Length: 318
Image (cartoon, rainbow, N blue to C red; front, side):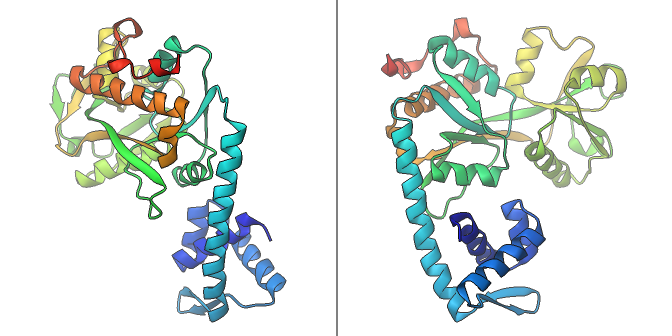
C-alpha cells in the first residue's frame, strides 16, 4: 500500500462520491475503483458502504480515515524535511501559474538582478499544485483565486487587482468603443493561448455573470495573428494591455475595457508558511510584492531599467 493510494481513499471519503473524487484527483473513475478494491482486499476490510448515490465510511473505514490522515501528515512532513535538506543550497525556484501574462516579465526582471537563479515551471492542475506546495515540491503558486487551506499550512495573499481588456480586430463592429459590456460579446469566439484550463474557467464565469456565453474557444500559440485574420476576442489584464500599447505591438488591433464592475483579474500568491523563512523564496516573495505594488500604482508593467526594488528587498541575497 502506497501513500498515494491512501490519499486516494481519504479523498474518496471526503467527497463521498466516486466521480467527484476521481475528478478532484485527476484520475479515471475505474482507476480509483481499482485502488479501493486493492486496498480492501489487502486489508481484508470493507471501508465503504453505498447509500443511495453516496459512499459512506464503515466503522473500519472511519478508523482507516483517522489513521490514514495521521500517516499522510507524517509523510508530508518527511517529504518536506527531505526537500529542505536537498535544497539547502538551491539556486532555482519552482513555481506554478495559471496566468502567464506578466509572469515572464517578473521572472525576467528578477533574473536581471540574480542571473544565476533559474526558474522551473510546474505543469499540472491547480489542485495538484496545492498538494505539491504542501509536500515541498513547489515554492510558490500564482493563481486567479484565493486558496483556502483547511490545514492552514498554505498562506494565500492578493498581489494585484486590475481591469480586464478585450483585444479585437479594428474591423470589429465594437472597435470604435472604449468600453464594452460583456453581455454584447454573447456567442463570440474567445481566443486563448494554449495550456489555459484555468483561464477558460475564469472567463466562462465572467460571461455567466453577465448573462452571456462563450460561442467558441480557439487556442493558439499566435493569438494576435489569429485576431488579425479571423477576428474574435482576446482578454488581457490592464497592465499587460498597456505594455502592448506602449510598445506599439497592437498593430491593427484595438483594446476595449470591459465595462462590468466584476471584470477584474485578481492575482494571488500562495506558499507554505515556512517558505517565508527560506532566503531565496522570501526574497522572491518580497520582490513580487514590490513589483505588483508598482504595477497597481502605474497600471503597467515596468521596464527592467525603470524598476528599483523597494527597501532593498531582494538585495538581502547578496
